Amino acid sequence: MKSQKHLNWARVLSLAVAGTLLVACTTAGQSQESSGRDGFFVRNIYDWRAIDNENLVIWAPNRKNAYLVRLASYCHGLNFAETLVVDSKLPYLDTSGLGHVVIFNPTKQRCLIDTLERVDDYDTAVALIEGEEESDEDVDAEGGET
Image (cartoon, rainbow, N blue to C red; front, top):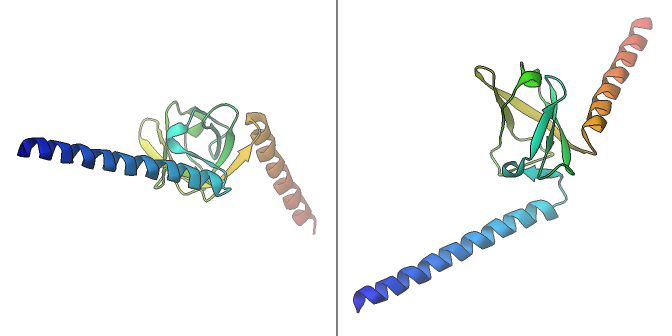
């Protein structure tokens, strides 16, 4: 009789814990999405492609959602990397850019993420990067003339 009561109590307790975890996971997803911040859950990365050694595009959770990820500095070998890991203290990566890109070629290299920006697609991200490089060159040229 006592073992049956303990078994029932264990079932009730396990259902309560499972319910709490389910609600916590659901609310965490809703709070991130409803907060208006652009970003994605790290576990939902669908694909990625390097633009150069300082910028890459990550698609998450599908090909319709592209993000331009700018790194804080040069990340040697990024444009040749075959494997990439996004490391974040939070379960999601948003515009705060709190996280690292980790590549293995042949040694492990952690590259700090500087910013994250939603883009339409890969070509838009490339055009954005090239446009900024051209405007930087124009500023340098104007500065050199004075």
